[in-house]
Length: 165
Image (cartoon, rainbow, N blue to C red; front, side, top):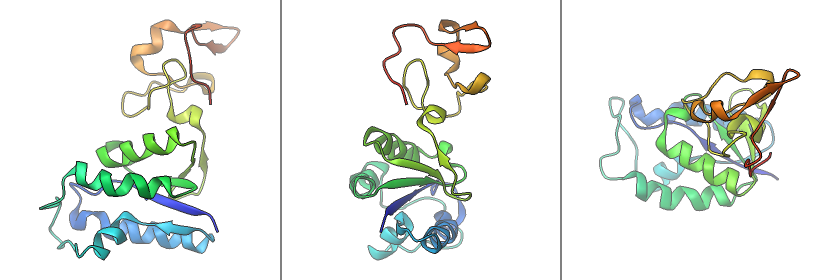
């Protein structure tokens, strides 16, 4: 059975978004996946947030990543919840998953997300909120845009591009 890690925002959301993590986990379990749910991992360690709670009282992002990155490594894929791009932890988890060449999915739709949609086609960096429009199916950072040229309706990266999906 394939294993999938659920990545998404927790901090700044009531109940640390645990109900949404459980909802998404149920979706993936119904699809036949073994789910690694960081909300469940927190609960297993005795951490249960209150309804008003939006931050972890005694768990730093560094401590969370020490626990979560090995969990990502143990999975075949990662599923990105809505709002993942605004989450420092989920962004780190995604970068780690991409470095390990894991499959990436939209947590809600189950659609496979291709590396070319998550990484800048020029510098290979992770695309977050600095994303430029996906012209002709190619995504680049705004800072990389001047290095691209349009020829026959296709984007061509400058020769120094070192990463391809």
